[in-house]
Length: 188
Image (tube, rainbow, N blue to C red):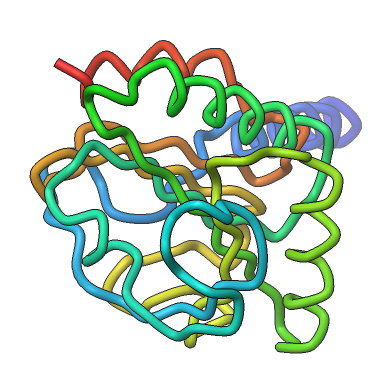
């Protein structure tokens, strides 16, 4: 009987941990919430956007109510690069709708975040996407609720309102195609 109880307990623990691992990661502002101002320093990319590298500004403010995709990442992984490249093409294809995006690199160390963001910009080889370091570089702006356990958080907004949100505990789990599909929520 003891052995049976121990086996049931072990099975329950395994099932519980599997369910916890399969749980969706929640990070960042959610659908219906308003995006607020926050300051960043431009590090690379989007040479034609009128912002010089090294300038501290609010890109969210610069973009105003235009449709925008705000990416917070702790990873320069393949899926992140794929998403950035797809967004770069979407910006060019939707010039009339003024789609904007910017990539915020997060890390515990400011110098590490800066170096990683610059490397990501070089790897992605895009022309329309700025790469920035938020002033609150560890976890992004406090009022955005970025989960420190999420490697990637993607917020799609229009008119200052969040229309979609994607978060991944691991950048490997980021679904770039789903984000691109949801652009229709901010381009209409």
